[in-house]
Image (cartoon, rainbow, N blue to C red; front, top):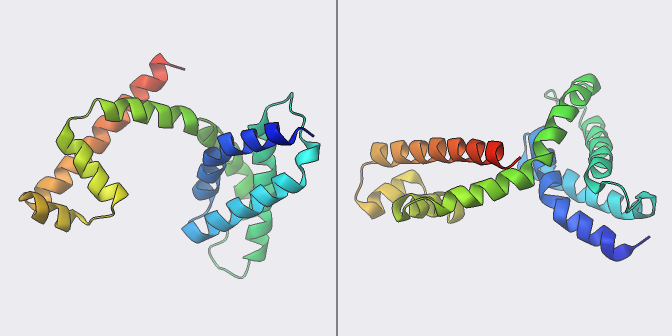
Length: 169
């Protein structure tokens, strides 16, 4: 096994694996646990990966089995999906997670196009985890104004990302 190529592939695709885990699990802690277990299993099975093939489909397969194992361990919970439901969701979730890197690149391009106030609002809300009420107070705007601005920014970014994805498939 080429250890360097494996580590590069795992590092490059970890955000997509993380998105896959979060899309399949309601609790953030569970998603992190499954992601960590998946990375350990990938490392343990690294000799099985052929570096001349795509890494992500192979990694998704390992993640899917790790996820199924997690669900089996959690069967005591009343909000657990049947294995059939997980299998049905797997394909769609894998497609969405595969596009994660492209969507993130599109988001980066779209964020550059924003004016300073929307960038600042996104930073305060998502990066520093300020509440909308705190942002409204700090900026001298009404709470409803801040909520509406954030909604419009999200809509604008969503539309921009979709345009970017269509023009740069």
